[in-house]
Image (cartoon, rainbow, N blue to C red; front, side, top):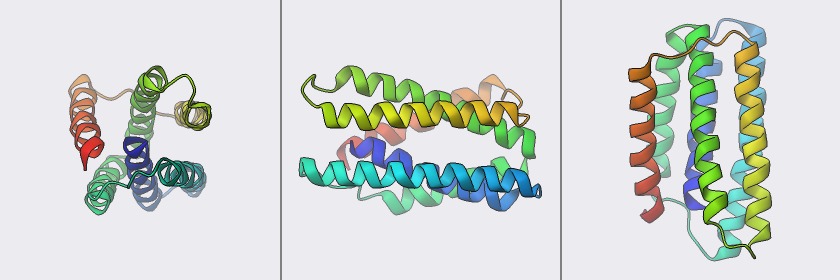
Length: 159
């Protein structure tokens, strides 16, 4: 659950930076709406961590700052690429959440419910970004995103 919490910290930063970067008022509202969804996810994962007696990642400020910077870069690249970044991010998050669902104990219904709802919301964010004009990112960018996510998830698992 700590890894999911870190993901929500990163999502907050990404969406906030992308909202700051766009000049399109409607797109800004969409990014802000998605950030509010991620705020719910952040609260759910925080509460679940507390229920499990676990701690948040000690590196959360670093995750936030790095993700904010990435979000600014994506936003400055233009709205279509920024939206493409959302689509790819959310697809990768969905894959991670699928793996998490498979790994959760069958009896942990509370965590399963949280992860399932998060997965549904992330899929909706990707669909909304696609409808708003996302372009597909180059394969090298998608690969770099996967590599960065692997570093984050592996580190956050322990720290």
